[in-house]
Length: 373
Picture 1 (cartoon, helix red, strand yellow):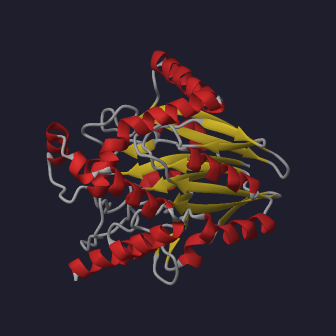
Picture 2 (tube, rainbow, N blue to C red):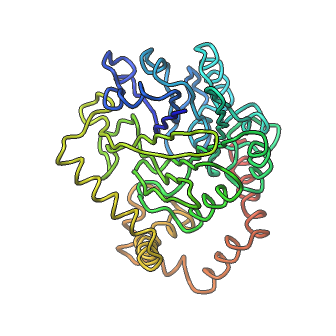
């Protein structure tokens, strides 16, 4: 069995109405696959009831027929599928069902969200499970939403699937946006899933292609990047994607992958020219080598923290957020008044300690709900 995985798909109105083949750049790979799996990065809905959240609320009115015909299974496990609350999710589930499309990763409750989709060819069956990090979209019980990536919730569902099927592939949504470097804990989590019996772990969300790591003979794709996702001012790497190809028999799994360009001329996926493709391959090869070198990887992760720490401090702890506020804080060196040593120790403890973090998270959630109501 050959299964192809492609990353984040979000179409603006122009792309929805486009009559071109938006997957032309990977058409050969798609045609060669028995099943194609993609991350549907936004609900298909007419609802205007926006979720109260940080970041844009995305939605699509429909998907082009040729795109629907090209994709067999959609993952809904991401941070945008609940952007228009349950109405948006419900309309999306109905839309996919009416178009005879399989989906996984979100549902009317946590059991439904963790429900695996099984694809079969001959004697080979593969169970697909989708999960996402905790960014406004998750379900933890009877409410609708996305399956949590947290192993406290996912463990029993993954183990149950591993015990029932020859192969389980996890399509997860997480990582640091616009970074090709997976964090140490994210790597540990992906490897833990392999230890639990997953045949492969495939990740999206960062909008940048990430490295690939072979762990105990099984592949981890840390980010597929975007498949189709417009951006008027794309950050570096935004317009490059990766299609992951898994070749699966009863007792073995192997993989390959191809790079492609996306939405450089508002026309979906495109084949890269030879010179650019070679540069991308060389850069990606170095990235894969770097994360396998513990000293190099540790240094790269430390540099990433140094680069982004002030911004994280500001967004998490500064009492007023408005356009230009971060620049004012930096110029006037106001961070001293917000982050003194004593307060930083309290904040570190409240965030790092599991028990404190649980109370802090719930208290913030209740405060937001009180303010809204």
